[in-house]
Image 1 (cartoon, one colour):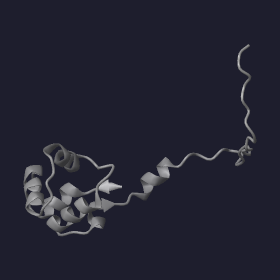
Image 2 (image 1 turned 180 degrees about the horizontal axis):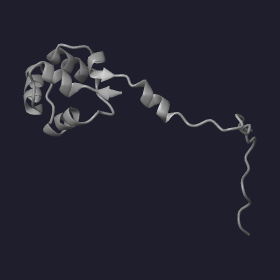
Image 3 (image 1 turned 30 degrees about the horizontal axis):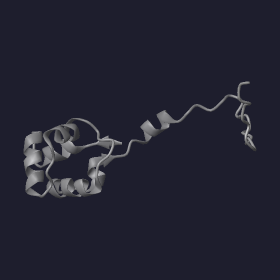
Image 4 (image 1 turned 120 degrees about the vertical axis):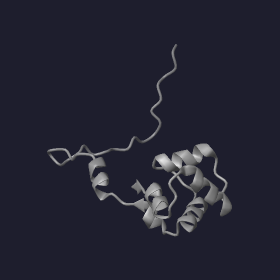
Length: 103
């Protein structure tokens, strides 16, 4: 997933995170300077849907404009298949296999 906040902000004439933070505050979303800096410079690992709603309202866009799918990145993360194509079957361990306490 690619985070396009800066691009969408630039399209609205917002060039600095402080300006974006001010506009978000005017719309009712108070964000700390540290959180705004993180949203501005990096891709967030999580974002509240309420916050995303306000960001989209300020930037006059949809969430799909801010979050762009990158299917190539997903393919890179897939584990490589074994050459034989088979894996050892997983067998459940039944009962309690506890060791005997020391004598």
